[in-house]
Image (cartoon, rainbow, N blue to C red; front, side, top):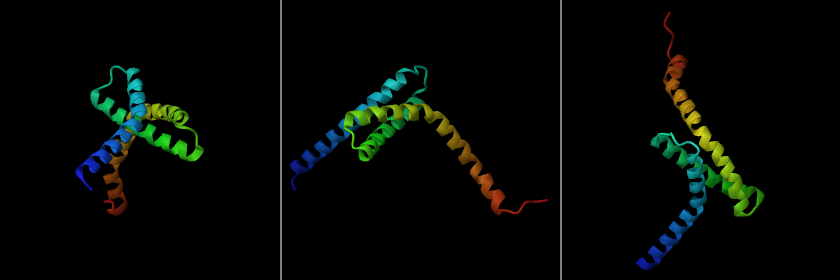
Length: 114
């Protein structure tokens, strides 16, 4: 295997990856247009979540229903919009739960003082 073969395979893989993520990234960017006063940290997080959910939802819809890519991407876009809006609440709930874990472990395994 020579360098030309490796570079050709890498470029094809990269183009396939970019091509499969482009619709979900555009959808996430369109969803952010509805919320102009979001901080950048939250924008990036929601962009990553929205595009990831859209990508995997598209694969799942195609695997389950065998519909074509356009229909699956349209449905996955709607699912990604819901995930995009739910991200802040899910992140907050996850943080709140993780904060209480040490206290729960201590209550369960350490004896209570009277």
